[in-house]
Image (cartoon, rainbow, N blue to C red):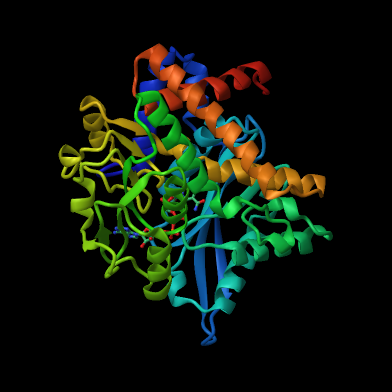
Length: 416
Ligand code: NAD
């Protein structure tokens, strides 16, 4: 999230701003700015050509004060300990804002999954899980999918863990296929959460979500589900971009046709129902809501002065750089921060874990109703805190998170 340098340092900057306002005790401050456990493993894998490669893997359990550590596993060539630690810290704050009984973790393997066969990916996943086996488990640390990992990889995580402990353990991982203990509603959960907080922001700011113009960067899981659910509330999705290009229609895009086009061509680019559009044009549109739902570091000092939306809902993790965020706030733009806006995913992962542990599965309506309640409560907690401290919503989300984790840290006391 930092424009240069360490991502963990950028996280600490955000943390420090909120901790100062909260007058956090120095001892608790120290504890909450250190990762509890950082694991580095080497994973040898025999590749399809017979060669042996050794991949570096990480698992960071940043904080487990509120419950088992929770966070995804990322497969990417740029994975580093600094990045994984920052992401594990953000998971800690996200779970605390969402008010679910989890700590924060993240894992990653330095690899390029686009150049690996399915068999190589399976071998790598199983060896990585075997290397961290003592540190994970339903009561300890519960992984999930992240960049370049999916439900098949979670199935291998679950199977490897189960083979080691000698019984089927579905609750060791979330984001699994439905057939092996996944939850209904999980696939749509992040986009559903984005829809709910955007709707609540419109209500708070006094504009009607029905007829509101919305622009979305990214048309993957988060972007496409957010678009669909907001359109069902009567909002007009006027612009969408993705890795290849974009499309704009001031009257509102026909989402059914756009989804078909994206499925067929693997991009929204070239959609016949709209005009071509670049990311830069998308960010500068005069819309009610802008939803970055693609990558980190998209709204920067280069394009933030051009943003004209009333609301920015951060569907992606870290889409706005710290300087750009400050500028948007000063310009009166209502930014719903990632640790609140995209917390619908981890909240429903919590529901998946609960269902696995019960061995009793809910109807989709029940999952969605519970998610609606949790997201509205989280939005309200962050909004009320921002009004009380007269700060932006990102700072207030940190205040909510730090005070929850800090209070429990103090109650539990020091063990030495
Ligand atoms: P995804 O891979 O399904 O979709 C990503 C989308 O971004 C694709 O449409 C892709 O074309 C687009 N994209 C890639 N590069 C782009 C570029 N340069 N310009 C414009 N668009 C570009 O991923 P996702 O699951 O939708 O995740 C999106 C973001 O949301 C990520 O930051 C992720 O960490 C975050 N997030 C996802 C979840 C979840 O449950 N899926 C939960 C929390 C946060």
